[in-house]
Length: 222
Ligand code: ADP
Ligand code: ZN
Image (cartoon, rainbow, N blue to C red; front, side, top):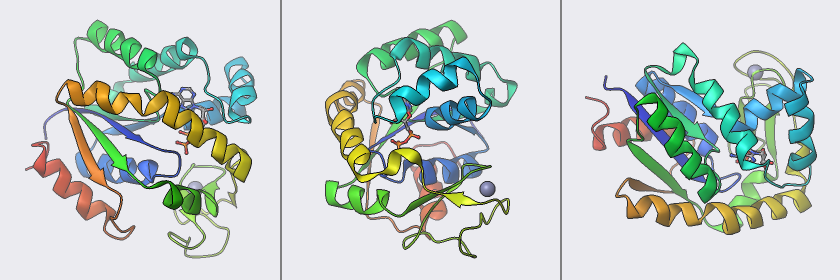
């Protein structure tokens, strides 16, 4: 398969993480989720993790330079050589510019930007009831995507918890930040001709098949 560098854009709770991981399986590329990278840093007690937490708990964005440096570092890992999907980055126009610089230093570019277009009511519904595996970060939803056994991760058997920033007030703040800072990226990438809109209606069961169809449509899978 062709090397694919992709971005997935979508509001918090739009299901971008689930779609990104399905696409990674289909294409054999890695998922680079900045939220997960920050949470891993926090778990490992790094300075970056502690700093990130102070923003994340309020539903605010971690500063652009710090975030971009973390992404650049992550993309140096050999597992990104076959391609990657950025999940949660860029989230501001400044980050998109920094990403251009990072990629030009690597002699690479983004093939496509997938935009998950989900109505607000749906976002609020999906974010409440979201569960995350404390070990492998797999996500579930109590009603839309429940684990096979209550409170336990299907993939690794660890405990499922509610994310600290999934409190209703914080979700509203994150949505607001998304609209103000991240939504302008839709036009930014549309202007470059790399935007692909994905309607929100896709079912959870069909995610993998849908993502394979999408990969074919954009010429990344045969
Ligand atoms: P969601 O997409 O559901 O909001 P994430 O796990 O992607 O969840 O992000 C959680 C939090 O991590 C964000 O609210 C923000 O504080 C921080 N974060 C993640 N990615 C970025 C980024 N690219 N820039 C700044 N902050 C980020
Ligand atoms: Zn797990």
